[in-house]
Amino acid sequence: MATPLDRDPYVSLLSYKRNGSGVETAVWAAPLDGKLVVFTLKDSFKVKRIRRNPKVRVAKCGVAGKLLGPWHDGTCVLVTDPAHEARAYDALNAKYGWQMRLGTLLRSLFGGLDKRCVLEIALDA
Image (cartoon, rainbow, N blue to C red; front, side):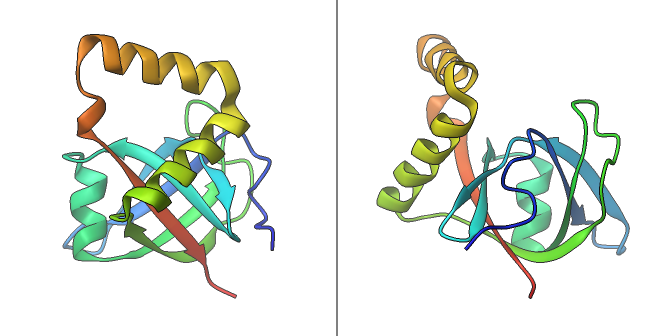
């Protein structure tokens, strides 16, 4: 099952602060099993916000985060299963090709590969 954002190169991920206001972040997102997968740093504020409140919104955007499409509501979780995380990275590599592989190589060479994590977004019906 496809999502409406599967082919879009950049997706704006909106997560919520404690006070209810939203924070938008432009991310790469790849389709996997009818959901979207995103990678980020484990200690990023978006991960902290999502752990506190898994409700998110996503929309097509440009590289600088300018919205290019409608918002879609969803739920986001941190992927903890290593096999599922590996499949998510495979999906990201398939979609973003050399750019994703280069980023992974640089992270492995200069440290920090272990600081990344995967988020999975299920869009509401």
